[in-house]
Length: 208
Image (tube, one colour):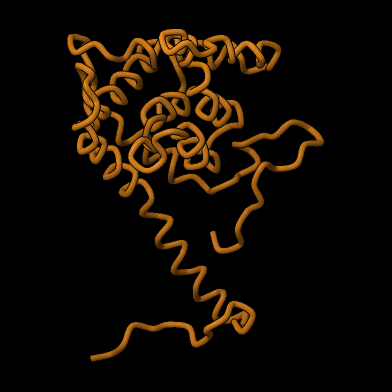
């Protein structure tokens, strides 16, 4: 039985150019299966519902948010963002917004990444006061060019997506959109389109 091919180094500084290119080929193969892992993670959201208490599951909430975005005329990037915006709930419960933003950042325009990253703060306007906390923290960003975009995301889609009677699309409906977005070349400048003169928020890993 042949052993699985592997590099010989035990420290990164020992690796040869040939080994790095060998590893990049494996990483690219793994990267191409990212949509499969995201779909599996979305399905896993239903496993986190033992402590939830809402009328809809986390998965149903995600699907309903995406359904509302699509019905409201959002483009494919915003629809997919709405679909995966709470995907970090299982591992990054208290900062899931940042985790979801990091997942989608290489594949969408900067506006979408910012909206996903900030939606947790913007959502607090609807409930923080019930815990005697500040529910106006989002107003610190009122002059940001994407403030209204995040407001729309939260007001029209996210905070409203807890209705068990709402006609919600299935994950199968959104799967082609998710695959289309997450099959793009990561950090394609034509997609991300950073402001003129601004540095890319994350350096591109040469392995991807």
